[in-house]
Structures are given as structure tokens and as C-alpha cells.
Image 1: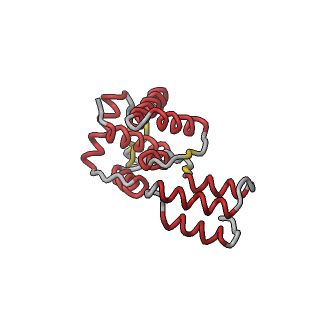
Image 2 (image 1 turned 90 degrees about the horizontal axis):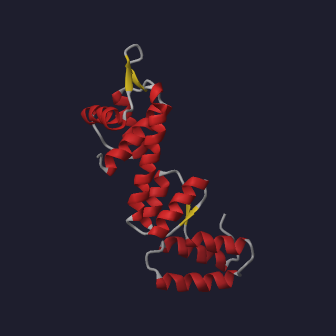
Image 3 (image 1 turned 45 degrees about the vertical axis):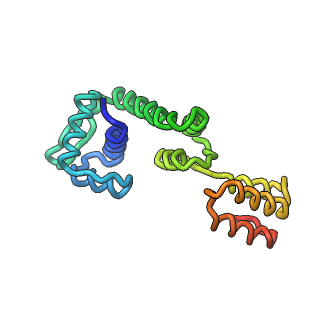
Amino acid sequence: MAGYKLLKRLEVIIHLLQNYPNASKKTLVERLEQDYDIITTNRTMERDFKALETEFGIGLQYQPTKKGYILDRKDEKRIQSFFKFVELVHLGELFKESLEDCSVWYYSKKLSGVLLTGNGKLRKQARKDNLEVRGIIFLFDELLKRELITFEVAIEKIKQLRLLNNRLPKKEIENRIDRWNKNKHVD
């Protein structure tokens, strides 16, 4: 069975071929690096093409006139099944963190919702999945905008929170306190 990194790379290759039909190996290698920070080689790309075919039944066809590759149209159902499989693997990777984090990620993705978390791994995965991610500082901003707390209370509480959680972004908190001292919302 393919490893997690390989699955992620195969998923990205399929997305690239869907968005850039007739892309050459060179183009795919460049897009992987530029768009996804995945560094690979032409030889690895050949192994990836073979893995798609042998392990997942997803064929690629080389188009000599266009000097590039396309996904075999008859494999559309397999491609969708592959995406579901990869989603479950993502879920499993997150499950290592905690069931709650895994559930939040899953439903944010399924419902195209905003993910509210302070978990670094979860934030990173959510960004890779193109989910909007927010943290606790965002909640303060929203409470202020909706006038559910005053600027004074927000300053007091965020200072307390900073003492309890030293992983929060210090610069962001200082910027908020400066603005809130002037009774200004964050844009």
C-alpha cells in the first residue's frame, strides 16, 4: 500500500492533470514544487504514473502531438474513488491527533466551512485542503464587532489568555491590544 506522502503527491498529480491537460513531466514537476512545495524528479514522476495505474487503476495517456499527459477518461469513477480514499487517509492522519480535531476538519471540509483551531498540524492540513482557518484571536475580533464585549474586556481577557498560552502569536496580540486601546476594530 502506498505511503501517506505518495498518496498526497498522487492526489496533487491528478489535480494538476485535471487543471493542466497535456502537461509534460517537466511541467508537472515544476507545478508540484511551485504550487505545493513538493520536490520530485522526472524518474519519481514515472514511478508515480505507474503507481496510479497499478495500485489504483487510473491510467494516463501520453499525447505525442501535444507532448504531454492526460487522464484516461474511462477512469473517472476510479479517480473519484481515489479522492475519497485519500480523504479517508487524511482523516486517519488527523485522527492521530485527536478525534475532536479530526471531526472538526472533516465537517469543515465537507460543509466548506471555516475551521476554528489552534492546532498547528490541523491548521497546516486545512490550508493544504484550501479551507479557511481561524484562531482564538479571530473570536475576540468577532465578539468586539458584534459588541458582545467591550474593548477593555477584550484587552483584559487576551492578556490573561497570553499568560495561559505562550504559543499564541505575540506580535498579533500586541497589535490587537494597541488597536483596542484606541477603540479600533481590526479590519
